[in-house]
Length: 489
Ligand code: FES
Image 1 (cartoon, rainbow, N blue to C red):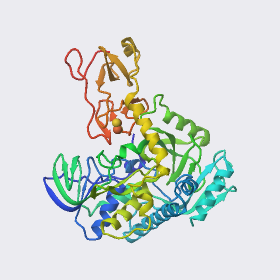
Image 2 (spheres, rainbow, N blue to C red):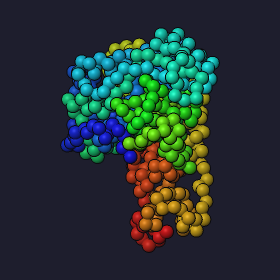
Image 3 (tube, rainbow, N blue to C red):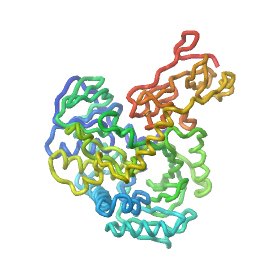
Image 4 (cartoon, protein in one colour):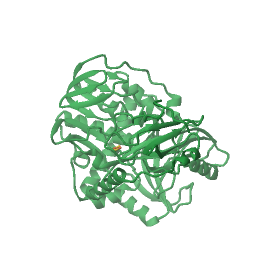
């Protein structure tokens, strides 16, 4: 499964870290946030190194729907209520500024990245809710309006429209921006101790360290695991699908997100918390929606994305923790990675250069107030559920009922293990304890992976790490016959 971005843009390969190095600023993570902040800091005259465990943009940047918008669902009415007008205004100002900076960089650097100005819409069934959001956004000086006279594609009462928004090709943009940067790929960070970053290729000493690696993997200090979880969502790219101008997203659960790219339509939806997808079927549901709303359309690509969700719905951007003054973090972008990445680059550059930033307070990672408290409690409950849940008892004879190409948690020789059944019927058993903080992994039938419901680490069917916060794969279980990776089904 490959996104249309990776199908239409190849990024040149970079070498791995060749040994120990010293620099002023090290950025961990070569996605949109890492590359943007590295670019800003290098342009300001700093010596910067980017360390990427895989290839640049190989995480969520290649799977985004690449909407550049300050409209983040229906969040302004909520922010008003939970954080007050001042902080809601900071959030709005930061994201509007992010759109302007994208526009300026693309113009100044002449980046050919299919940048297109358009409006963004949240459509929904409840007029009062939509009007309340439009009024909250207008009070924050956002270019918002409630509309009911648009050609709405779905069964809706109306929509909130934001003008002056945009969309683009994220990899074409990132490729141009990354070109002058010092980036080391296939360089996996194992540990960070003070100003030293220990990788599988050598140690980097840096005055300042920025964690821009999607989910911060250092558990203490920071404790991001206690205030963030991850969600997955799914996208189809369709040919021959007519749709009105603009980027659209539904206000209610179970609705669709839509944008165009050239003659393609990107249809997204099917979100769920990572690790809570026992039945699967997300792609099939999207395909049904495509047949219903876009009869005659033809699927040309499908892919999925994973997003970090914070306790209070606002990203964590700023100092990593009070006890580590030289560490910075950019995470928890919800489902709005493009503007959040740009906000991170602006804010962290100001902080590292000792400048006051007008929207620093709302994104401060060490904030903790009543708005976040409820979310943190909920994260804690979910994590405890993942830690203590009783392992599903499946009698051994049911292993034979497991369909080929699927996995499950089974009792095997008196012990509980995860097993994946290959197409030829042989079983591949793995440990089901997440190496991050020990929660029980769950089988994801849609994507044939082992996913952690606590903080969203993912492992392929053979136990190899797909994404963190875990930093290692899961162990392979021994079989009776001493064969490490084969048990008879
Ligand atoms: Fe934290 Fe699995 S990701 S315990």
